[in-house]
Image (cartoon, rainbow, N blue to C red; front, side, top):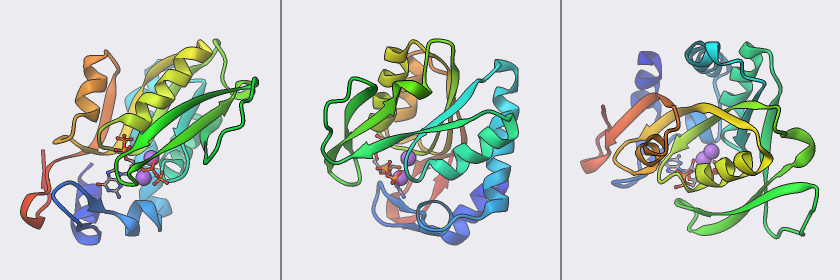
Length: 189
Ligand code: G4P
Ligand code: NA
Ligand code: NA
């Protein structure tokens, strides 16, 4: 998605060799028109798949996931993050490590919103090592729902997340792939 590459070049900043600050377009402010274009693009790429629900993890995945769900006319489910998880028989829970925050969090989805009849499209904003993604994928598997694929706004392809998920047989579609952030420069694939 060329427009997104431009916006990343203009409005993000390289924090280190592996972290790109994208507060202006993803993590702190969103451009509704640009985000709707992301949703349209994901919807186009997965349109043949008979998606019943879009799913993401709160919080920064929600805008792009919402846009996609809107275009596909299906509900959006977002996994909740909890600091301490009270065991809940009515929810699927997974513990996930976080790359940028350096800690573990628990994510949960109520059994009410995910079932074996669902064919879900997982949308996420950024993929790094894929730990959070793997957590949500485990939840989807345990619910019996089918994973149609994953749509990622920004894949950092120098980290293993996207590649590992593709090796597992998941159809991962990224709008933008960044192959390097070395020397403070953004290089797209
Ligand atoms: P992953 O395993 O899902 O690939 O990601 P990882 O746990 O490595 O990263 C944890 C969090 O850090 C995620 O946000 C992810 O989006 C974010 N992140 C990873 N690399 C970058 C980066 O280069 N730039 C930015 N801006 N974010 C990055 P999260 O914990 O899900 O939090 P939230 O933003 O959704 O609230
Ligand atoms: Na994030
Ligand atoms: Na996210």
